[in-house]
Image 1 (cartoon, rainbow over the protein chains, first blue to last red):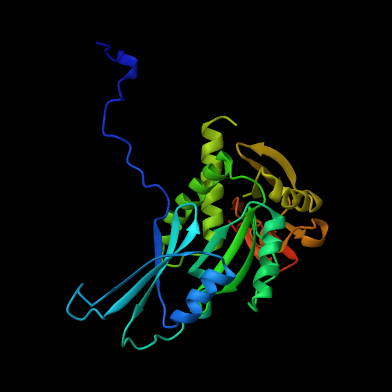
Image 2: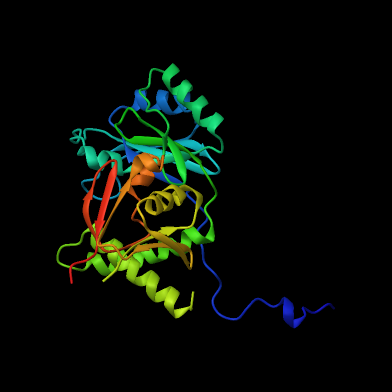
Length: 202
Length: 84
């Protein structure tokens, strides 16, 4: 009987536990027809699952339909439609723009082709906007959820992660002060960089 | 007190480093960053000298600042030494 060599044993300690991407994101809709048409036709995402139920979760939970579209890469976007639920007010413009969902494409050609496709479906869509690492177009779904399609301008690299580590360390320090500002964050980050580089003799 | 900014050494931020050098700051490597510093009390970076895209310009100080912002507009970044 073969026995595992010591080197084939798993390392000691607890196993590494890591989730594997997005199973689904869930939103609420008051416009089921427009939502289904938008996601299946304009975005080409197949409807893959729907469940209807009485409100069983808690006593005041409304009866509902929960339906799912396939976003690709094993990811789904889902909507609840709640019977009898009054429509909520729209969020502020800042919250509308902040809470968004970005879909990935690989190339500029795909990004531009998506823009033309969306326009062909009568959807208002922005011009491509280049950020630091990505270039994006923006548009809204029928529920007012801001969507984005984005492509990488260059791959993220370890230097980006090291920079992000310093930024969030500076943010954590500054955010606990009475009046946090981005200028204070930039000053704190410079201190951290100097500390790191002087410590490493760089 | 000194006046310095740090620019991550990646392609999209190279125009920021060039704008800083055009403003009279001197570059030296500091780990993953370029440290751009001057003995002068003030420095004015101009966006039109750097052909830098809007999102990156507004993030020009994301690497860090040893100094203070006098004025940061859509085309000018005026920096000064911190007051002692």
